[in-house]
Length: 119
Image 1: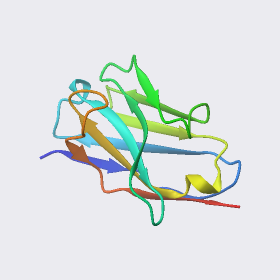
Image 2: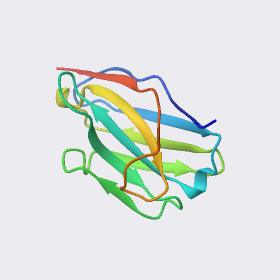
Image 3: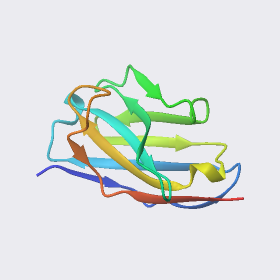
Image 4: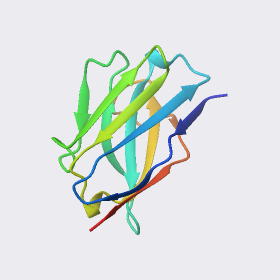
């Protein structure tokens, strides 16, 4: 049984930083690309960042490029999202996801964690 468990999000002020993590179990972690998606209030879920299985290749949405960094530790079956220079528009429920082929439709999803950026 595959499980993706995000760390607790939180409330942060504009300009602040927050690091999310997602621990995976029940799958061969290095064989999966990992993503972060988010769903702002009242909007559809959107892509944030992705990282290939080996960690060599990363991808970002234009809205977070230069502010967010995705990384992974395959020894600990964990993917991270370092979020810097946070803005109120980054407020959303953040989800991690896993897929066999990077940037394809994810196969597995976490339960989501709330990140709120106050102005």
